[in-house]
Each structure stands twice: as C-alpha cells, then as structure tokens.
Length: 438
Image (cartoon, rainbow, N blue to C red):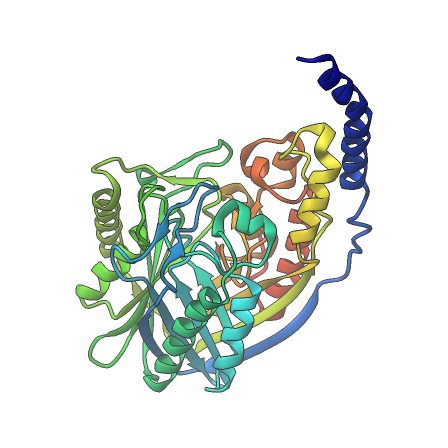
C-alpha cells in the first residue's frame, strides 16, 4: 500500500470511528419511551341462549401472485402458483339474540388490519362479533403485515393486495355462512394421541389432544371445528409454491368424508412440533392429515342438550414495553428494543367465546403448552386458542421467560407479557361467564 493511501486511511479513521460511535449512540437512545400499563377494557360483548342455529362456508383464497412464501427468515422463495388451493372457512353461530362468526384462514397469522376489515364487512351482513384465526401455515402467502419485524422475520414485503386477498376470502365465507343459517344440534367429543406431537424447546409437552365440535343439521353436518396444537411446518421451506400444509389437507379430507365445512383451529402450539416422519413434503403433510382425521373419527361427539349458551367478549390489553434481551447480544440490547418498539402496537386483544360446555380463550399469538395450561387455570377456560385476532409473537410463562428458556428465546416481550394478557383473559372470562377456575 502506498504511503499516500495510508495517509488517507489514517485521516479517515477518526471520522469512521466517530460515525460508527454516533450511529451506535443514536440506535441505543431510548426511543421507546415509557409504556403505560392500563386496566383491561371490555370492547364489546354479546350473550344469548336458546336453540342453536349455524351456517358455514368455505371460499378459495386468491393470492396476489407472484407473492412471497411466508413463514421463515430470508432468503424466501417467491411463488407464482399454489400446490393446492388455500381457503378461508367460516361458521356463523346464533343463539337467542347473540350472533358470532368464526373464521379460519390458511395463513401464517392474521393482523389487526385484516381483522378490522373483516369485522367491518361482516357487520354489513349482521355479524358484529367475529373471531378470526390462522392455521399457522408456514407455506402460505405473505405480504400482509406492515411491521418491519414481521416483514423481516416471516411475511416479506408488505403488499396491500395481500391484505385484500385475505379479507375478501374471509368476508365472502362469512356472508355465505350467514345465508345458510339453519337449526343445528351441538355435539362435542375428544381424543388424544401424545405420540403425534413433541415439544421442540422443552417445558410442558403438548398432549396431542384433538377436540371435535360438530354442528349437525336436520340431515347432515353443517360444520365441524377441529382444535389441535402443532406447527404447520411439514412443507419444505424452499418450496416455491404456496401450500396449506396439513391443516388444509385435513379439512379437505373431512369435507370429502361428509363432515360439512371443516375448520381447523390451533390450540397452544407455541412449542408443539409434529412428530410424524413418514414421507417428505406434501406426502408427509398428507400422511399426518390422515392420522389426524382418524383421530377425529375416534373423538365420538356427544350431543349437548339445549338450550345452548352462546357468549363472546372482546377485551383490550395494554402491552408491556418490548424486551429484546433474549434475542440479541447484550451490547445491542437498546437498539434491539428500539427496533421492536417501532414494530409493536401498544394494545392488543384477548377474546373469550362460550358455546355450550366449551369455554374458549383466544390469544393473539403463540402460547406454549405451559402458557396455555396456566391461562386455563387462571380463567377456567376449557381450551386456549392461538393465532387469533392479531399477532404479538410467542407467549411463554413468566417463570420460563425469566430463565431465558423455552420459546421465550423467540418472545418479543419480557415476563410482563403473560401478566398483561392473563389480566385481560380474566376479564374476558368473567364477562362471558366461564366456570370458576379450580
């Protein structure tokens, strides 16, 4: 290296160091500020009791091809077609003066933007309370989340057309479900196979419980809701096709067998992985769907005597300040917090739905088996559902977060997240009238 070039580099070095120091100082400044804790607020509620009516429908989702395949960090493939169709499925329930819609979308998760637009359109057809859930399919389309963290870690570049595709499918399914409302009887059953799932990060192991809810019309089932907990990650991440993974295949199997519209709903799946290794890719997803369908067949449902209770409540919870301490090195903690703060809402929503003997608590994220068990004990819920009406990431118990173990290593918030969501869950459960926790 020539002496003149060395002189230039020596002259530039202090400037480079000052620039790097200034950038570090700016990134480390407390841009988050203080996040105020507020009392959980009941946003809306509805209660009814009487003869049960239900309608159901499924509608194909139409991704805005070409579109990123969501579910993983970069690099991500871009898809121009689907391996098999993606769907929105909806059921509308009515008892007494209460009417509630439930939508299952074959997506990675849903956002408040999607939920708000679906509710706005649903209100036009007389459905003012709607629960929107995702199957957590890691091979569906992305592009529907404006948050930087989500775009970087899973959903890819934001595209308004992707939001429109999700909203259009959900809204049409709800509209068709309303048009098909008819008298039904409610049947509930369950079966378990712990060998179908495993814990990917320790902690309380998932139990492999499948709950089957049947809404039976005069001559045939109108709809079926299947609740199970396991990540939908059986399709290889490099596949340049959108695919509904095992939840879509399970629903299609059940519908072909005459179960009516079959909605798949995730439970506390934060640490639950599929323990099924027969085949690869689509073959493996189809095989696991067949195993779950056989388990559902064994979950012989029992009829629930009328009149049937139907109640729903939405409760707003304030979120704690984001905490990146388990996600980034200590010297970048402040910058990590700032990055999360820029992508985090200050409020979220926890919902409670009672349908006959079912008391369902829904969380806008991915509760682990341990977190789900803790929420059930806190509220008296019979089931805790994840991926509902928004997404705040993983939820593990406060004790696990404090040790930095389990799924807390992926959690955007500290131990206060469980406390805040738990407080809102208790309000939601009390508003709906869940059975007192033991």
